[in-house]
Image 1: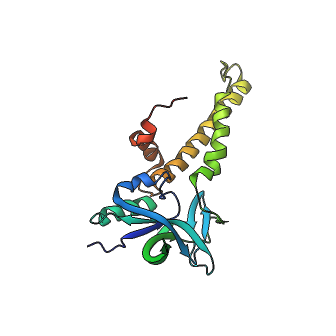
Image 2: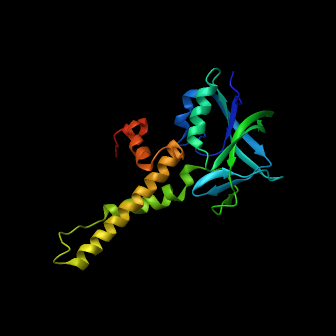
Image 3: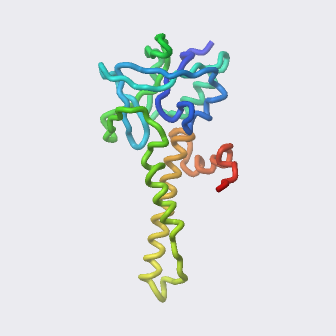
Length: 213
């Protein structure tokens, strides 16, 4: 028998339809819209996090029912996904779903005074993440519009470094965006190096599908 709860309240990247749900989908028997009262939702370092209790506030999310007999595997996966730096598990919180109250686990933020968290008043979605919805499209446009010319640092140092600095800036920004994407997809555990997570995209079914215009 698992020592963990049989339900988990999620409000971020582990919600059905979000990038991280694939990590636990096979371990979940059912999910339903839910609300956690007296907590508040914040955005910190580009990731959603709920605060300690704030009377009168509420967080909208989803209640996941864990497949019977798969509780240990589920909590191993989820604990690895969330890591221990930014989140801690509260294992017995009252969550309202479909007109009933259930006791469920939820990952709440550690050290909420750090990182300048921004209060969110609507549910979090990766589709609204400005890094994905605004920054990346602009970067994609800039990369596609690059006009490269042959030059070298010896004969044309200014032209060479103007071009090279632009390319390096685009490359570093792209890596930064990919790293953020991998955290949302695979979790933020420090046990995985960023480039390891990026290479893991080769194993994801959605990223194996050829792009069709």
